[in-house]
Image 1: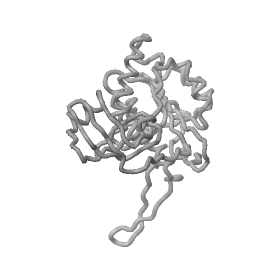
Image 2: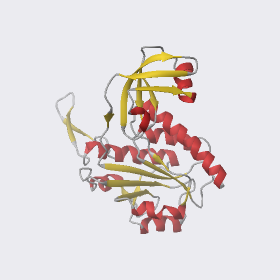
Image 3: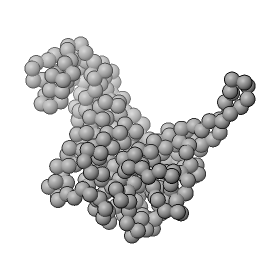
Image 4: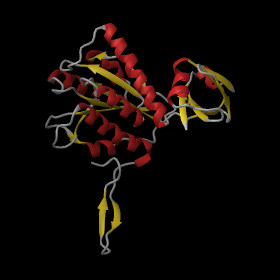
Length: 272
């Protein structure tokens, strides 16, 4: 089924008309016809099923087939702090982070971030990133868009970190802990939480930057013996945190039977 983002005001209407870029995508890319179903979402948790009632070369009329449905707010928010990688890797990361259900994305400009943006460039970059996030949400069935912040200087992340109830940073230091026991200590059943996940740039954090993050309560964790790219580390953490948030609970050993009847063990989603 085709999906389209509309405004919160539009999704409350039983009949709505789409024109401009939204209609163009449905008409000339997806080639919808009268009677085709279109799922609408407002990016804030509301969804509704419509059918195409009429079409012209420039516009579509949709009629609601079901009442408005509002998705419950998750008890735990996931915030990604990520130092912006160069090239198209940030765009790919935004798409996949949206698919993994991230709630807020903070693109960070740190000392070793290769990308440098003036205010005009930063706004243009955010506008493009937002279109990528919207397209990813449309494709994956998300009812909510992540809150995508503008490119943020490193020092300005302090209040955002203080708002997190748990903060974890991927670190290459000897003091970094294994990820699994750190995740075991999280309680996804307690509402009103915001779990923050930090990933540094190419070249890693400077010592002062890592100290700044740790001084705000972050727990340093290791992701294993290999050094991961920024986007890989970001998605690794989001996938593990997402498993815990969605009810995977603490990692545990699950008994499995082999062909000869002996027991072996497997680690569930979220284990390392």
